[in-house]
Length: 569
Ligand code: ATP
Ligand code: MG
Ligand code: MG
Ligand code: MG
Image 1 (cartoon, helix red, strand yellow):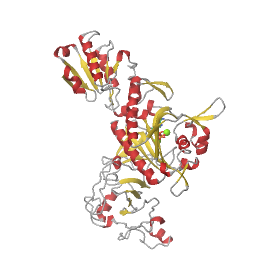
Image 2 (cartoon, helix red, strand yellow):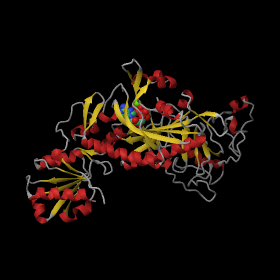
Image 3 (cartoon, protein in one colour):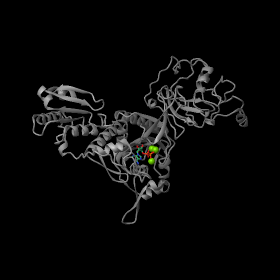
Image 4 (tube, protein in one colour):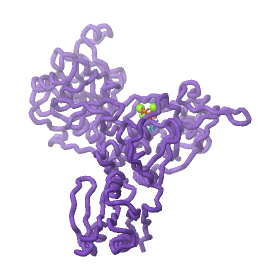
């Protein structure tokens, strides 16, 4: 039997709504979450979640945790209070700066309130996981984080105490880390989709956390602090970072190949076609694009200043590729054009780092009909890992993937994934015995979702003049019942019975049983953003119907009362 669900009786519910807009709330999310009685400010960057806000937070938590669980991450919880010694071990006690909330206990011992938990997780596993046989290990937690932000603002968007869902993975090899990193990126993409957020993945700077490879997941919103350019084909770049490329679909692998197993690219049959495409790229300084093809083989596109492009299929990953001119090649004692695929036009020189000199099976896509990859959408046709040296792209430039005009947008960083490598495990001596019987530091990844910030991001994207428009997946309840007549009337009786029927069905609904005028109830229902409003009035009741209003569209339909529960659930 399905457990009975709660009815949220508003007469008794702690959801004080505000008519006035709080004066210091600039952003819609901040304003509306306060006005709808979901959060309250307790100090600079400090917020309490009231019951409705807590329900939303719990729904977001459920989405995030279920996606983490689905990829095999296991939930734990670690203390907030972290001894300074651990931070001295990693070197971050000094490096982290004033954002670290430092405190002293009664014994004069120094601590910090965790802004993130890399040190703690290393300390947790380093004496427990001893053999490669136990790897990978993937743990996550969800809890409050503390950062003494220089300017806490915008409510939940940038607070000093906030809720983060943070994961940490430990690996023997880079390949294993890459796999978990990719799976987590997919899980993050799914979470944001489930929250109905419109978002872009952007290659990122790893900031305070460290490591080399990192992707941010940005919810598009005018209020966002990050500046992005994007294209309908899926290209997105962080303008401030200046060197980013990513594609949400990169994680979804929609690849089609021709008979030879190559990605056929319509319209490109020659190096001239290719050059023409490249002239449409936004700048002269794009040098190389490194990624993997459908078989997971590394692939590099090289784009010299003269805008010729070569497609190279390498068998190993290709960090450290550089483009060299003839003079530089000669300096190294290398004959002109000797490095690189056969059949290159004379004006193209490619130089790879030493480890790649004897790579077998390079393919010169650009020099064979049908192998050219232009019009190829990066991340759709293949996965892109890195742009090496990319200039700043601006709105109005053309998209480097498809040639259309780039649009500008602002983004809210909702989550970020990092490949940490051995940054923490080395300094903190978190090691295990590898297959060869040698001590080796764990290769680590870490991943963080701003759960409370996601709540604000959802409101930024989904609101109108009247209030919040929660997507059904995170709404505090699916529907609110609005009885419009006086307390004790038939209308009220019907409303209570209806609420009970929903509850017995396991569907949580709210019931506005306050003695308020219809106008007040309507306004509050719009403000709080329940996806459905079930309006019961005297006239409708006499005809045996209720009015069903969809908050998102405002669309109203009359529905026979006895069909309502069926129709809504
Ligand atoms: P920002 O660039 O906005 O300062 P960050 O890059 O410092 O964020 P991370 O260390 O990547 O943050 O933490 C993971 C996630 O935690 C972020 O993607 C964000 O969603 C959330 N987060 C970080 N700082 C705050 C904050 N002050 N208030 C609310 N959420 C935050
Ligand atoms: Mg920060
Ligand atoms: Mg950031
Ligand atoms: Mg970040």
